[in-house]
Image (cartoon, rainbow, N blue to C red; front, side, top):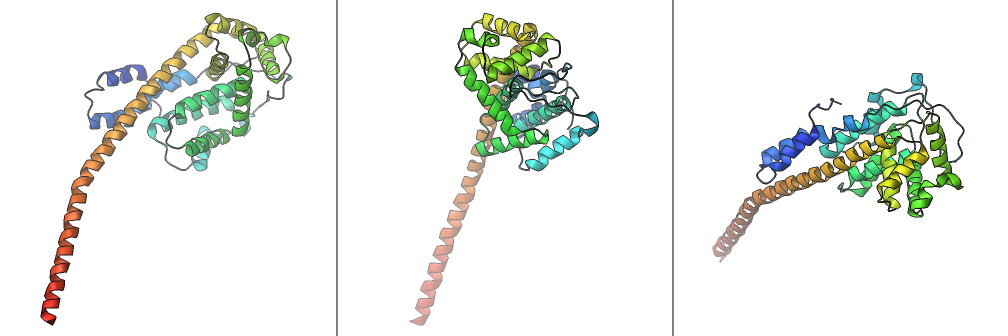
Length: 310
């Protein structure tokens, strides 16, 4: 995949939106075929430095140890090819550009020797994916793309969905106090969070922005709107709150840009559809005239034939 340009998406997109009222069809087309390559500046958002994670015993069945040997790791091209083989239908560029960038970054993280899967990370990825693909033309295709994406990384898409659902169900049942006091309770999710806190306290936890989004989702489902709750949760998990704040600010901004981009895409599609319908009207009129003339000619020929008989 060609590298994304270093041009800031925020700058180029803002300029495009300012011309929204007067933008022509051709310029809108150029926006979605070229500026989409700058969508979200995902290289900046998702290409994080993943810290070293040493092996430790798990206190929960949901925490899965995934260690990978560098010598056994496929190349980025092979992972992308596996995705394309698993899902062969075309994907609109506004979605495909982001997916291709995501899979490259996740491949690099996935095949580090120290890689370790955890359910909060899974929740974060599922949240990002669902936000990205919201409004996709087909729910069936959206699910198929998700499965192809995770399978291409040699992981289990069902586990991602299952763990994300468990985390969401747990969060909905929490209040502001129980959310941050998980260490004093027993349970499957509590065990997940305890394991993370333990590893982070030893400096063995691999923080990522998917993890930050996972935390954001937990707070959202618990209806935790007070800023102090995030601070307490980060403290309980031994996570640097400044990193989480920074990454969540970027994430919220990117969601806003995504909404704007999809609105422009919808306007472009609607405008092109209207143009096709307008072009089709004269053609239909000509076909109707031709059909009527053909019927009239046939009637005249029949009348002439009957006249000759009699």
